[in-house]
Image 1 (tube, protein in one colour):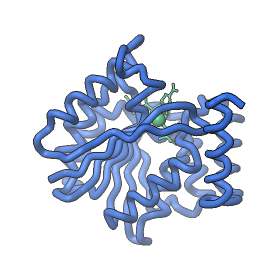
Image 2 (tube, protein in one colour):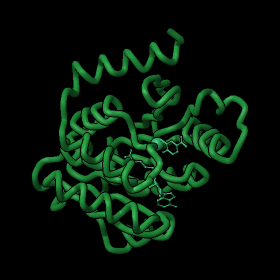
Image 3 (cartoon, protein in one colour):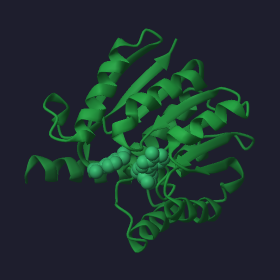
Length: 220
Ligand code: SAH
Ligand code: DHB
Ligand code: MG
């Protein structure tokens, strides 16, 4: 067994133990494949991890950048109290439509608002419509704009809130970026490390999604 196979097998073992059968999430994954969307949602184990982070910061309001089919949105929204709110930003109207259907299927549509458009164009609207601060922000869209999303997350998150970003390791490519994806997250990581308004670290992760990681930042 290769290391990658072992990591995937152990990920499946963790999923069996700590996630279990979840017909709804499995239907969401099928909808992603059927719609021909890229299978780039977080894994089940990462979803459970995001859910726990949201619970740990007692999140009532969460912002997500990058909805895809709503898989991570469902995990995050499940961590909210019934009157909680998740706003998820998505550039592709086709992705947003499928995510909307999936959130309805999950019985979470009332708690979630999908905002369609390039996030850098819709984020100023959130600010100008007077959205109260968020308890948690999950950044998972185009990596080239990660540093700009960090600036927005800092503007929109309350003191003591949490900023999380996916894909900050990319198979170790952050050490020697080979494309704009890896360069984007490398710039983001450097900006996060130098940011005086947060305490942060990167967490390496292995599993069914390969070798990657998430950034975790606590807003002071
Ligand atoms: N968070 C999702 C996966 C998101 S994949 C999950 O884990 O289930 C990244 C998503 O970001 C894609 O749906 C893509 O269309 C979207 N995206 C890419 N560029 C964007 C932009 N500029 N603004 C908003 N969304 C963007
Ligand atoms: C990829 C993976 C992701 O988790 C993501 O958010 C975007 C792209 C990828 O592997 O290309
Ligand atoms: Mg991702």
